[in-house]
Length: 489
Image (cartoon, rainbow, N blue to C red; front, side, top):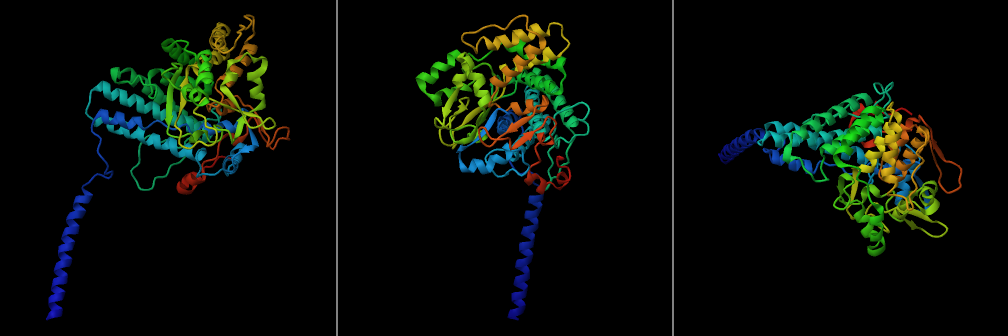
């Protein structure tokens, strides 16, 4: 009897618990898959996009170029382990480090997710049509920028004859909701086509966004959309279009060029850190079109402090100091000893010993890049006035870079002027993460040594397949289809 009562009570308790469980399950299954706060207004989606701007984790590419050299005596031990494989263009680079290909791959796709989130939700959100257009435009440009950087990191350079067969990166234009999502790689052409479409639509939407389009330099604008399109057209070799879009920026913003002569006194009066922090401040430098605010110096670990191990090459330093007329030489500070003398660029909040938690600002676009893009494209186009246009462009920068300033000979040939433009581009944009893309598009070879005067340990040839960085190992392991689509070697 006691046993029977216990059994009955046990069954009753079990049934009661089952009912509670069933009710709970029904309630649980009625919840949305993504049970975070539901976004309902255009203003909320604008706030999502505040966090959609990527950290410049492609800045590590500077150590892949001919702008930087390795110096073992001025290298922190961890940097040797972490970054020397990249300097030698090896596929087995570490994944779990502060910056590098793996961080770039993960970080840019995270921001693509947020851009897609805004694009998918804005149609049903409350708000005016102007406000929605501003959100669409900004989200499209963020997505375009992220895909563009990724394809230029992990794919070969765009060539009309090979872009439709060369592997690019996975295009993600819709956020999948599955627990495990896999993606295959699109071709370089498919990625470029999508990026170009997103830019064009993004610019059009921003033009319809009215007062809701932010004037803040930390957000995309029509000008930065045009700057992105100009860069894309330059990389594709579509010279007339590169001229057009860069002219659109110049016509809107004018020839705003950093006035280094005004900056240099701050180094003398306020010190290195103040000068470096101020260098990328858009409040005092209207030449900066768009910025990323990075919570730490992480993207600059290989190049941004006194014992980073990778420094501007002796060749580049000589370009700045030849004749002592180039004001840009004052942007560099000497590190090391008399025997091991090297330099670092004071473009960011550079620290003496380690990056730690100092926040930095890194540019997406500035006017100097746009002006030099316009100059190069004008020279390479069939424009009969191309030389004069390019001469006007490059002189707008040179007259604020050299003291005393000597104008170029007005009888300079097209080929001679192109050499000047490319050198000024290299000098102006050093340590801003763009040289690697120029190495690829200009089909340049690079020689790296492990010490001054040593024989070359590695040579990257003009059409070297290693110019497409290998897909990160962690991505190969968790995204099975991509493991069969690795970059050829």
